[in-house]
Image (cartoon, rainbow, N blue to C red):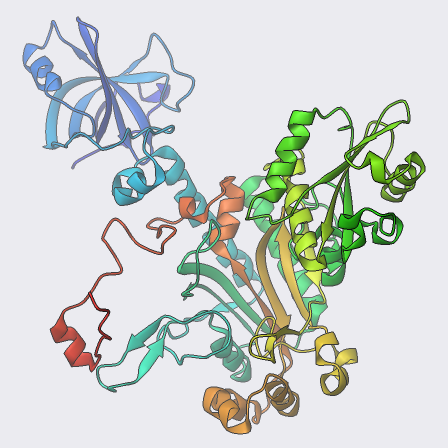
Length: 585
């Protein structure tokens, strides 16, 4: 056999045993009379020892070893004199008496260490080497454990895991589809699923009242730290449920994952916040509630004083940064530069220092009296020693910029501890959103989301005011998942399609199979889908989901390790009946 034990397994209780290990060479340290080798596999590191004076042949073999050489060694377990408390095997070492090089290795392009010298692009190109690093290995082990616990919890709740098709029909709603040409049906295409939405609803019609799937999904959209063209979601659906049933079930699953994976007990019910309040007080539908600094609308008390920036603004919003009145001019200039960044988009920043002695120091002294600043501070609940930060402009854009400023202040003040978790449900989203370019409504989630019962009448008179029976789970400012109660009534679904601008023929062409299924007794149903990659990244304490995916794509959607996507041969194109448009190159 290649090994009797792993490199993370041996302890003091194994002293005097003869063992065989196999793994990669992490370090070789030749100290003259003795050579020490750190041997690594997935399970850990074990120190090997060669006595150079007693075994010349073995000593010569060891001299030829390089980093990442794959070796097999046999030797006796001994107690270490200089123990290493940083590793699990730090109390022992292996005095080796035979060594077999299974494979030599080129010098790696970056060091295989926890703190590597390789940049992200380089590590992605050689991802198979990056996978040997402890942080990546631990992230993938965490991912594995989370998947097991999800399956365990949902199985105990009578959910059944069912696979749905990967090749399906393209739909125009939502993000862009990845399309797959069909050789057997020339000129026709499958789409890769953005979600198993339609199929899980059909499973409800089929009587499988509790379904789940840990499933790959695909969206051809612009990327960022929490998006990939292919991603994994925990997809769930339930029959004979109302919103409260869904929230309580998956709140329990969330608590289960926190307890079993992170050892964190979350007491009580998750708070709930309406979409309207989230936007009003945090400027985002995924607020980080680990800290306060809620927005205060001071438009009515700050405009009309001759300060044109405020007088011309649709919205003036303030946040109170506690005990920050001592900020220097340099620090305030840094904040001003931050809000002026294109990603934030504000034109400038107004500040009010509420000094400990009750006086005020501001950037707009000449336009306002001290009495005005006192009114602002009172409105914002500010106390002496606090700092008001104020943005003004068009409402939506200013709310967004103020949200970014709030998070930046949270970071600066150390209020966003990644080991502290604050989950909440955001509820009562708008059902529809208006697009000025196409002059029509689009579903904010998808066309099958049910409106709140008390708002159904507004579909005819004021569609934009209709609230959805929808909900998102947000943790620490990250949207972890979302879902809704679905429309199960054929007439209501037809009305929804009409509001969305679908003709009867278009609705039939796109969704006729689902509408036909609803004619055969569709139960009330609802569900949720969680971004599994995002959840693992949150638990791992990393910023990018690329760190918790074995083989991720880069920011351009490319796999730079195997150079995908790539062109295909003319023969393949001809077989598929695809003619590429001449690009002029």
